Length: 201
Image (tube, rainbow, N blue to C red; front, side, top):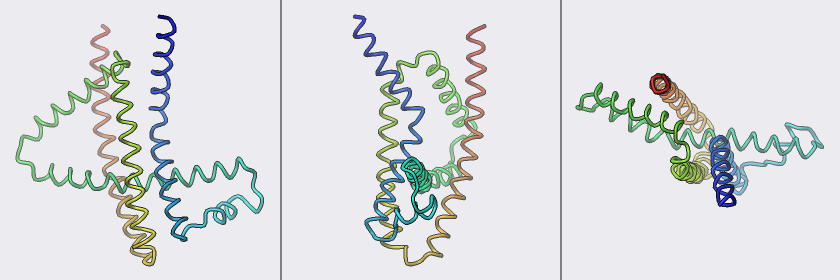
């Protein structure tokens, strides 16, 4: 029984630890696939780029750090491009929705708040949900890296101005939606904290 409990605890610990790094893994893996497409297309020369940053004979740890950083930054762009489509659809749908916005937003806010409270109180219940969320994030990022990589390195690479303009628009739009999401999460977190405080008094 003790052995089974230890394996269960180990699995839960690994999943929770991976959750803390899921954004890093999602971005780095997506960016890595994106860069591999660029290398295969002949437009990205990773070895030359790394040496131009780290010097002629950089140590292996410096090369590893630079490559991971390049993958991570590239992954941010890939994920931003992937989420720009549903974010744009959500904004348009919200703008032209005929339903009661206040009532719907209040319901969503309460559900998100309850989720945070229950996750804090009963973390083991959410292990399977978190595992599936991690897999979904990785799949979304890998799919996006293929689509964005093909579009950039095989369609738009010969048009650098257009490519830079599209990239700037995507990142600006993502920054705007991220600001909205942070504001929403601030309300959710505050309500969850208030609920948790009431439950413990």
